[in-house]
Image (tube, rainbow, N blue to C red; front, side, top):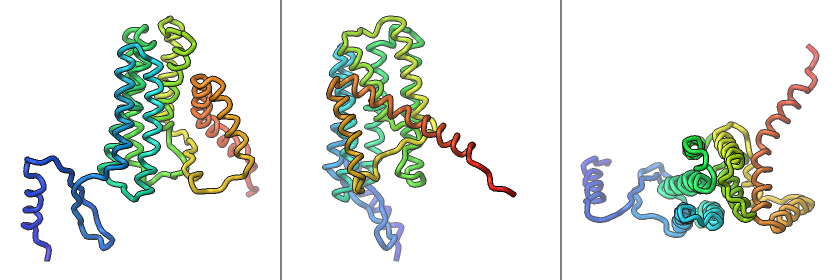
Length: 275
């Protein structure tokens, strides 16, 4: 028989105010409530590594080390892509891990890119510069919050809006390419262009454009010919790493609006059935 008093006693023991512990409530196969203590170590280590990389990017930008800051954001994206896969492979998904991952993404792909690009270029524009950086940060927060509430109702083959790691890749590769080509980023005309790219990236994150997620490629076969454009992309990136990453990021960012416009034109131009 269910005893609320015993349940309250367990809650009192779990939150005694002395030890640090995480308590998660879940349901077993029979639908009964199960209380789990602790966290899964391996996937959360990858999430922590992503968070550290984003934090390191901020510190590097504050010290004028923009190349290191940009690379750190890409490293954060690498770890962010691994933590979810590790959790699924080892069957260690948890509500705590999902929330922790989202907060880590906010730092690494919301706050860090905005501060890096502001330190590199946008501060030249004064208030307009930090407003553009803040718009990007808010858009990343909206994007992550919307993803969390829609995760069970959207087609997993697509992202709704540009994913925050990919938006961060645009910002990071732009800073990296500029720094690698000895562009200070403080010229007025360049700063205006950087501001436009930053705000457009923010807009794409909160838009309803659909972006292919590539998730179904993890365990599916593809025609051998698909390898050819993949090799071409690797060649472009390796020829000039920062410019190659910027090019690939911009092409992917443009794919959402282009696909939407193309599908609407096809549906508009389709012949209607006679009545």
